[in-house]
Image (tube, rainbow, N blue to C red; front, top):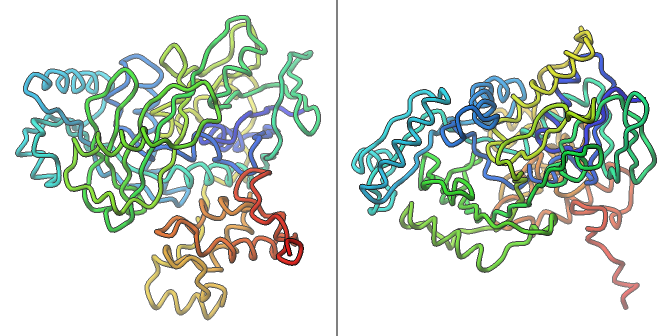
Length: 478
């Protein structure tokens, strides 16, 4: 019997796994996908929110501010990029200033430091490309940007190094109470665990409702985005928000931590919890609303559009804790924005809860830091030459758009929880994230994956088990 089974390998599931891995728990993580970070965590804004938007006293408010404070140290320990670029919330009319003042007061109640309201002139001095229609702005200096893929993967790698078992490509079909724990029925057999952590994103209500008479409901809230080339990345320095609505924080304009420009998301509730396709209407809404905030957005520089799903629970707050009528079943449910910001704090919160119940010792040899994949493009000419002399694979460029080398792809494959899919390589190295969106580098990436794993190229997939690229040979077709 496992001590803890975690359902879901998104940023929160992996953060919980990382924290638990420091203690003498036998932990496994299940995810139906072939890699970590294949659900909500792969398709969001990458924003580290200041914490002014959440209702005072809510879990969202408390964990947002805690997670924000933790992010500098977390990203330093995990060797991932993080930048405090600050954020602004814009208004366009004099009467809307009262709404900014209400957000300012709410932020102060949530203990968000340094906020202030800027006049049009002050805001435009900081961000010259703001719309000329802007009347005032709330400035939040603690806002930041991070890479959601790298944050999730880094937590998972540390957990793996400390002995957590990741059972990827194994879907949990059902959960039932059994004796002193729970029986999980999966696509690859049955597993017993004393405790279950339900971090299943948009599906968290399904697992909760299997074990509890107090039912919850999660709706998938779809958000569509445009990503622009790095040539547009300096259009704004801060993350630019509009006044929030009942559906969320609205369409934002933000630089990414890797230098691109991101627009979005929309907010549309959908019944299909796999509905991650973009729509003409959604992308049109993104571009129109973004133009209200920032002028002269170079839309010809859009290199891709994508959509993600947020897990909106009817109570409009995070649900984290042991389920009252299901002892040992821990919900990490309803984790929508600011879930990415809150994830490190959520990991600590759930770990503290389980340590309080089990009183496990901390491991003397637990790993707490990791070194990320080498980024060849960021090295000096001297460093590049020295690295190529030591490891010639770093002298072979695979992705020209992002200057990703074979050496980096090899690192991504042969590290803890190494990449097995093309998207797995992409999220660890950025191969395929540039202007051509993997149009040129995918075949070479597939060749390297097949060679290093000792399999045929026809077995290499984009992300899911049925997302193969190769259906046969030319001779077969002919």
